[in-house]
Length: 505
Image (cartoon, rainbow, N blue to C red; front, side):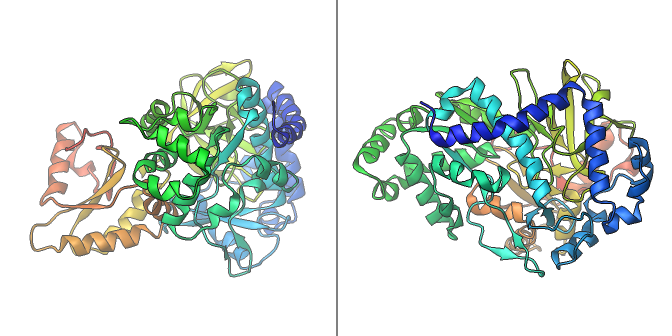
């Protein structure tokens, strides 16, 4: 029997799903309409006046007036918005910011308006409706939903605007009660400041939820780490449980491997990243929870909803009602959603209701094929040199700023096995204080809030330091042997080639 909270969510999804289906019937026209309405609504913003929005009559006009740009092009306007300035990028007032990482500064603020939150619900609600049709058992029990970072404490910008949003905000404030009624872990658990206490409270609530039917997280390592922590925390968790839950936990831990089916026999689906570097961890999660189907996430970035799973075909569909999407091919040409070719990969450029215009978000998607006129898309990685094993989003520029503080040449090496972690290679011998260097680098990397979050939760193992005299020259020689001229071999602060090395290498 479908829970009342699920019924309310699915009822609310009907209108946005109808709008999405209408957009999918004519992708080019729907995107042109979305863009025209957005530019007209924001013609009187500072950005709109500077770029002549009032005179734009077509997609071609828009492309001529507004160049493709990275986050740093918007940073001054966002800083002004954070300080309280109005109508910088959009006319709508900013109601909150989120903080994310990935740039050379280690962190960036992303603004949210009422319109931009509606654009997220325009993707999330149709996704839930489609998932409920394909996996109806998810609606018959409670859910564990982790969207916002756990253990984050309240913060505001210099202008007094909140940093961070509750999970319900992405569905709309009117659905907060419905979502809250189906949550297995109360939202206030996420506000617990100390990681050990947060972990125990989360595990206790999950074990109590014998009707858990659905889990939605970003990285599969997040859920893996929680489940795999149960055996070592069983005693501390058990004292928080009711007798029936305590008995189920004991039965689940009776064998050599935790039996998740004894804890959550009704768990029907787990939604998480399963593409690119997340694939091996999603496979591990599937083996740990054989009773549940792994449902791939679409590409819902902090800045925008870009794709969403919909239907049974591989890949996801473009979120046509959430923003204006462009796809840059390897030749540098920007294509519209109806111009994508099967087998090709593209860099995503997005225009959002919160004020990003032709924003190069840094993600690459592959076009797997088409269903009718609609491309099916899959995330394949970050554009440029980025390591993103569990959502930490470290890029070469940021890592370089951290390593340049050391007295010796160094590199940060991503390793996915035996568990995700980074190794600090130091181009020096015993004369270098490797422990001090590692402490300095760890402190510097924590300027990226997503790295700090992953480390604090244990998704990333401790930074390992490794003196390797001459590693830069050796790498250059290896690459030269592969046909790359020595003059073209650039030093890298971030090395990702070894992410799939076997244990012990």
